[in-house]
Length: 269
Ligand SMILES: Nc1ncnc2c1ncn2[C@@H]1O[C@H](COP(=O)(O)OP(=O)(O)OP(=O)(O)O)[C@@H](O)[C@H]1O
Image (cartoon, rainbow, N blue to C red):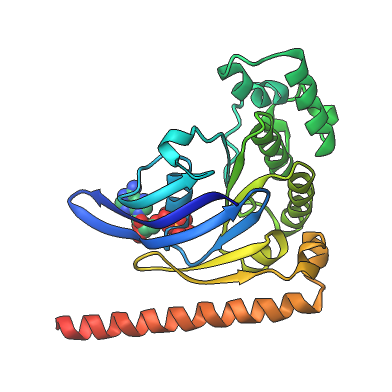
């Protein structure tokens, strides 16, 4: 059974009297424990989808279900990881991690021990009393990951969490997160522009189109790739085959949307 369902979801924004149709008729499901990537060009509505799932914005049409219940009734426990880590510079690493439990009045000894255990799993046991300014970008994102996992969320929303990192750090972090999410069987939705990252990390790729944001095609990642770590996936022969298929579809969509724009502008003049 599906854990999360987006059923014919559309969304438009109104700002300064401007109307933007951000999403048009989006339908997909995410199974429990599944890792789904939303891939697409800038402005196709990837972050809008995450904001809708997180309950930050209310979609204009359609419905979102969690375990068959409408999202607004489901009280979904969410972990949100962003490009920026948003660590508080005046708090130590352990205090940054324990902010979520503190807000929920759940700062038990067991929670602290869980935090220390997670820090050790991401290779950061020695820095609990350090401040974020003394850490590298990759270390800070590892802390952000622990802070996201400490409340044991039902679903993890990852909004380009690697895009501010250098390539080497990004590859290492992909492996670490992939490993941890499988250990804890976390249901996850990753937003990315990066085809390689989508293939390496996920079970399924939802490729999106822009203007307005819609689903162009869904690609299942072959089992042989899903069983490898993200780093090793990139060496697998099936990786290149899938990469080429996604790349071809992405280019085909971009070209047809460019042609449409040219036709529209020539009709206006
Ligand atoms: N608060 C807002 N007010 C008005 N329009 C918005 C708002 N947020 C997003 N949009 C518009 O909605 C569309 C989808 O934006 P969104 O940020 O969801 O896309 P995205 O695929 O996540 O883009 P990117 O990859 O650049 O982050 C875009 O046209 C964007 O300009």
